[in-house]
Image 1: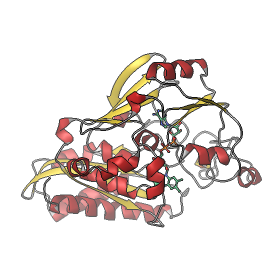
Image 2: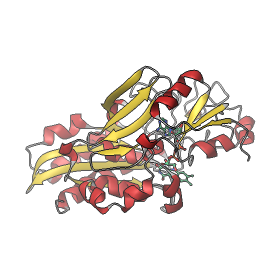
Image 3: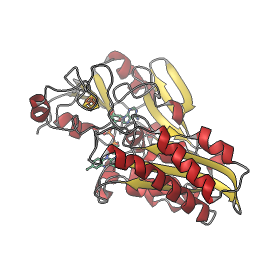
Image 4: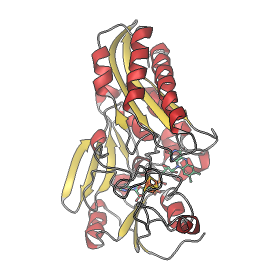
Length: 327
Ligand SMILES: Cc1cc2nc3c(=O)[nH]c(=O)nc-3n(C[C@H](O)[C@H](O)[C@H](O)COP(=O)(O)OP(=O)(O)OC[C@H]3O[C@@H](n4cnc5c(N)ncnc54)[C@H](O)[C@@H]3O)c2cc1C
Ligand code: SF4
């Protein structure tokens, strides 16, 4: 495997970055830590002739309890105890991303925008060529669900579910200007593994904003993976909530690793607010979430098993959140 040549640009401001994005529209990728993009480039997956590196743009750096810059590396966030105590589900998720070495380079922005995955896609050029390629790169059909319209590649970032339950917002900048949208709207629920985001052409993720109501909630992120040392999630379940004894005063639940986008389940958790979280209610919620998701066979574990684990992990994550000491 080798890296083909590309032209590297290194802008110094958000304005310069989006200027370059307008100039090289459709012909570039943004480069953050490169821990996802560059391995994909080495496998000749959707190469672009221009790469815009984001490491010299000061506005994208740093974090506080209110704001996380897109270029903030995962390690400093993981080491910040005050941040972890304020957002326990995010602290759990940070510890579960890849390996300590990858977390030194990988960024929050890159994690939220990580490419969707599939075992017919994350393969070498020759492996893919032997199969006739697929819709997501170089081909015109899907091998997972045989047809030619839709890609089922799985969203496999760990941080998105944990930030979704905090109702985080993202700040975007593009050739058409700046805007802020809920993180949940960054991902296209009507899209697929190819058209997975709602961003406009050339848009850059500048920062993540954390609203005050997410601070100090109890929380948990539970991840299913084959090798605990570094694998991507086969399922990720994030919970944030507050309880008055057994009564639920706030509850949010989000899943990643099972569909083409990370997803919050407000329609199932909101009816529980004000209610006692009995075993029956918790089981009913876990069953309803299980019924709502449809994993396909494009990761290591079989879809039926992953689906059954949804119920188990939802129950565990919520029970542990309820049992946790409030921050
Ligand atoms: C061995 C290994 C194991 C891994 N395991 C996990 C895992 O368990 N969980 C997990 O979540 N990830 C895992 N990853 C993937 C990856 O390391 C992380 O998701 C990391 O956080 C990605 O961040 P990055 O800065 O390196 O992204 P990059 O590779 O630089 O970028 C990823 C994508 O986001 C785009 N992008 C990056 N920043 C911006 C921005 N500010 N605006 C617009 N677009 C942007 C890039 O163009 C690219 O498409 C693993 C990677 C490796 C190599
Ligand atoms: S789900 Fe289908 S189209 Fe998408 S990456 Fe896998 S094989 Fe390719």
